[in-house]
Amino acid sequence: MTTASTAPHVPLRRQMWADLALLAVVTVWGMTFVMVKEAVTSFPVFAFLAARFSVAAVALLPIAWREALGCRFDRRLLWQGALMGVALFAGYGLQTMGLRYTTPAKAGFITGISVVLVPLGSAWFLRRPPSHAATVGVFLATVGLALLSLNEDLAVGLGDLLVLGCAVSFAVQIILTAAFAPGQPAVRLAMVQIATVALLSGVTSLLWEFPLPAINGQVIFAVVFTGVLATSFAFATQTVAQRFTSPTHTALIFSLEPVFAAAFSYLLIGERLTGRALLGCAFILFGMLTAELGDLAWRSIGGKYQPARRRREPIS
Image (cartoon, rainbow, N blue to C red; front, side, top):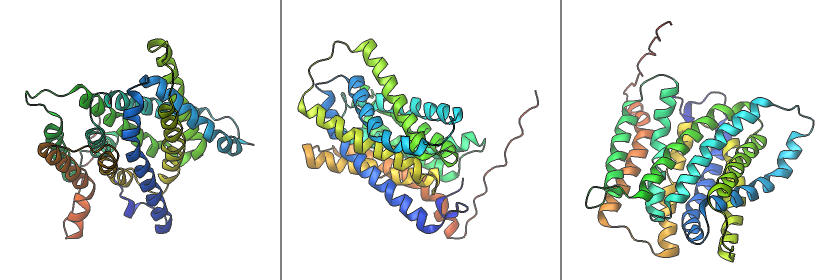
């Protein structure tokens, strides 16, 4: 897998600005865990997501319209953005439902496991085994997940399980973005992705959540904040930034999301994790960093990592 430091044809300055933009995205995402948890305690999950992503689509529409002027209709962009949107819908649906049953800090760290899954997923698509560092990272993150999520009777809470499914979905979305973004207009691709989530959320809400309760000011603020900053700004920025950095480097920056989530959860609602949960968080974070930086550190001290050769597939 190509790391950001060795990505071909990417000037270092552009890579640096891309990384800073992704860091801004992660900071905003870390702020939203508490906000979303409080919003969905009084408002249905998919109705909230439909409103959030509709606001995001409206916010992006002027930029996407200007980008589309004079361009021919592109079916490939439509299906690629829709596929990314399905992964994103699954991720946000599972995460938002999970926040009803678990805490913001725990949700942030479990969501962060997507960082470990990205190099494994990329390796799977390339039909190559993961690196030793990625394998160790998965093991450490799994231990951390057990410490963070298992109850005294060794049962996994429903909220933690839902958020784990969210982590898998987000890993798929990162890999799809890396595959599709370099060849497509960034804003239009993000627009299709966001509109897909709004449509799927709206249909799900119509089928399962009507009639809706009255919306209050707290929910309206959460919809606008998450729609404009945490969605339209965030995914447009991610789609642009991933043109100039690798999916693994993106995932490494995204590993800071649970740290921001835990910090804002403490500052805003005073959430404190138990000693075992904190140890689990440490294992998850260390697993993320090991998966992303392990091979780089090994090469820096003179080691060589050679991935296994690609297996020949049998001819059918």
